[in-house]
Image 1 (cartoon, helix red, strand yellow):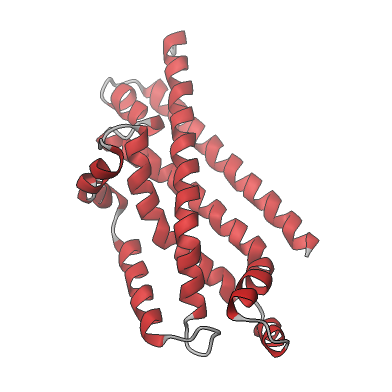
Image 2 (spheres, one colour; image 1 turned 90 degrees about the vertical axis):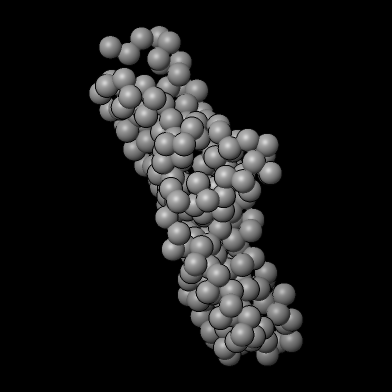
Length: 219
């Protein structure tokens, strides 16, 4: 039976998970969005064509995406300590979550921007628009619904990653499930954390879908 003290711990762990996922998504988007834009626009026959740069950046993104999160967390512990001063806890978990999500966001942004009709870009070029103007006034607005869905997918993935972060003391629901559910054989706590995680994922997905739907119909 879950008592009042455990309910309080569940609430705190849920809040910590939201902080990790929220900040991780924001930071990854701030870095991954420009990377995705560069990946698209430097492709052959695009507005900032730079084939060598495009291949190099694409290779780096692919390498980042290929590293399993559990390995990444351990591998960058020294970097995490330098950034936040510790490798344990909610704040520390934000670092590997962000690093893991950056290449994911970049590739999703690239996919979203590639959906923009070439005719729209060519029309902007014919009107004398500069590459930055095409990017920020044509490509991003046209791709905004898909970008919202990309960010939503990133946040959903980070919910799962944040649970894995609990395996090395990352805090949040994953940490609570391991310490109090698995190690103390409390099936009720394990089940409760899983239910909360499912609710979080459903809530994030529904919110992202709703925003994207409004953007689609607004356009």
